[in-house]
Length: 435
Ligand code: ATP
Ligand code: MG
Image (cartoon, rainbow, N blue to C red; front, side):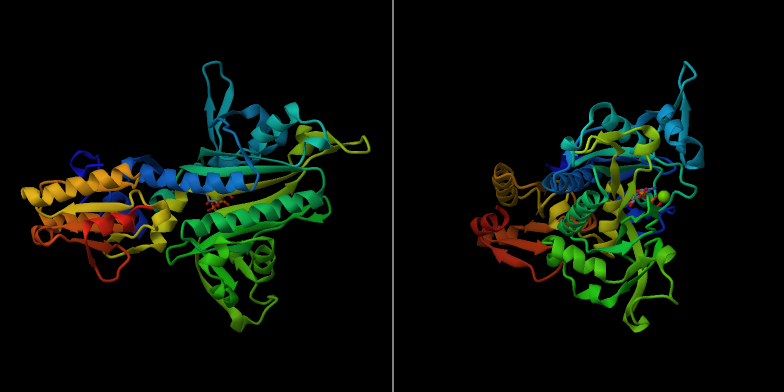
């Protein structure tokens, strides 16, 4: 992509309304534009990052055996009357009436809809286990939308729903998703700490529930966790298995609502506190919806029982903000390569110099042909402006091409995350960046 023709409306000034780094940087880097309070358009640069995150989430869900479908954003109120939640949900639910005076709503979550899909076609324990998910926009009329995409009103969520015959099978489905969550966040460069959440009781059983929190000063939750978490590396999380899941679940970690300083299973000297951004939440809810909505299956003995369910959410659009909170400096964003909008930016220091432009055009064509996502700053701008924009938008690798280097047959490679710049022959640069 040539920057001269790319739609990248960066801002020079820091917008007043933005109180935290991610919100500020997303506006300044031309990633989003607010369209109404808590509702955003995703501009090309932001959209690329969102797509990267969606893809990682999707791959890990598929690997875990979940199947993707797509449910609508607008739902009929009828199903919510059946579950009893239409009245309980309160003002966060956006209620709509159509021209025939039928009650509709913009879905804040999808338990009812998925239960309806399930009950209309699944009849037998033989069709279980089943896990269905979608990645879809939700609307919640939050009382205090803030921090940009971190607490929006319209936001993108991945929500998966598991269906099992027994509580034991449901536990297996839960642990499987728990592992997938550790891996998903680690692939984005995030060490998300699983914290125990309100377990509640379902049918006499203790249900499982965890929130996944990314530690950041700007997080909205107060969190408390065993300092042993500090020795769990990103790599451990990226390669998580059931054994790792069990190990992490045995360590103390809780957000404020679940934390009782006078009643902890570990020594208070071993507990660290901080702020966390909730990027995911998984929980079992047993037969809470399947019972009132009649989602039953036959057991091997021929009985009819309501299906055991669990729900698994990831805040996909919130993750964009969370990743920036965890990866930025005073110049701008520092994208982890896995979610970066482009891998490389080529900075042409002198667009009116034939030699420079020749080398740039050539490298651009070769990287592009090799499938490397490359942004080419071919604008007729001062070098200082180009550097500042490259730092702001946080592309992991900068290739700097100036007249002196071109004469000597070298180009400069810089990493956005720091370290010494390297001088390389163009052929060596290509082999470094391709593959
Ligand atoms: P919170 O406590 O932050 O309001 P929640 O418990 O209401 O979250 P869930 O219903 O479990 O959230 O939704 C699943 C995930 O969706 C959350 O873990 C979070 O990452 C994301 N999410 C929830 N509300 C918002 C929002 N208003 N804006 C952006 N993402 C959100
Ligand atoms: Mg909420």
